Length: 114
Length: 266
Image (cartoon, rainbow over all chains, first blue to last red; front, top):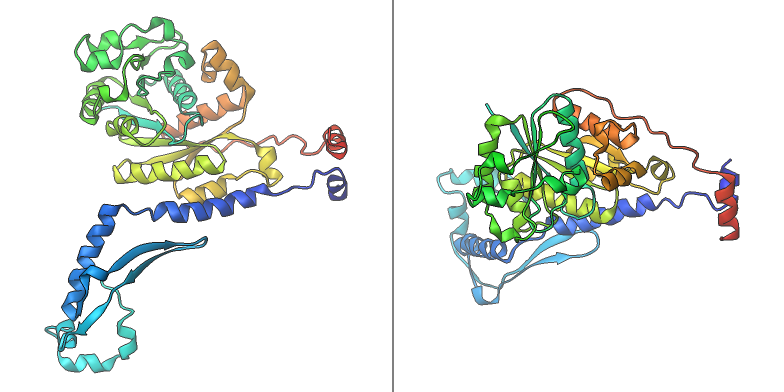
């Protein structure tokens, strides 16, 4: 039967697969469609957090959504003027300082606080 | 304790909002519920003709809002079944003639007297959609198994969620089981997976839908067609009944004549 279908040009072209893939990609983009207002608020709050730890050049911050076919990324380019001394103490305010040494330093940056 | 206000919406035009509203409204009324169908598509009204009530429209809901008439003067009673009413849209006005607060007030006014208030939403995501949705508690989102339609449904579902509508349920319209079987149409799992909403029914592509809108007689008045059955099932599920999805007669996906035509490209 399959042979006959193929012979008569009835073999499925499976265009539904194209539909699925195209929808997946288009919706990745649609769902990250961020309004300029939201991006502006995000920028303001990010500056607030960053300036706790470092002096930054606010006028040269680039913040944008980078879209390619497969994914969307938030790309921030923030020129640092100077790291503030004692920033590490600020980070763990109220905790005993020995707690800092117990975990790998590299891991800390992966912890996201919401 | 009042009636449930349900907006029927889609984002994209032409996917079957009005047909769905009319058929579900008729099916609910035939099941003994008291139903009002509101045409919220101001300026481009269609629900009156799909329901076959266009000659009986005197006032519109804009007249009610502007207090040119009483609410029950504007309600068009469908004489073919008990307890079914249409509240028509104004044809000569624009969507700016009404605001969300007024739609909320209108629905609240109807709630004590009806079991179901169905709102036929205009296409798009602007004012007309926001007005129609404002007064609703729940939503039915209509989509066809096509990329543009599913994409717009995704957008609309996001907006309905942020407006706090619940539940939001999906109607897949113009479904062609034979194309799905051949791998040439998105099936329900694909669509539900992409949109992550609950399904309330699948309506097959059916010529009788066009015939019924030609006549102004919604299929659920008793026509024995696959789409009529599908809409009746959706109405039953809206009332909380468990109805299994229909079994599809896919027909034969291959026949000799089609094959020969393709072979010779005629």
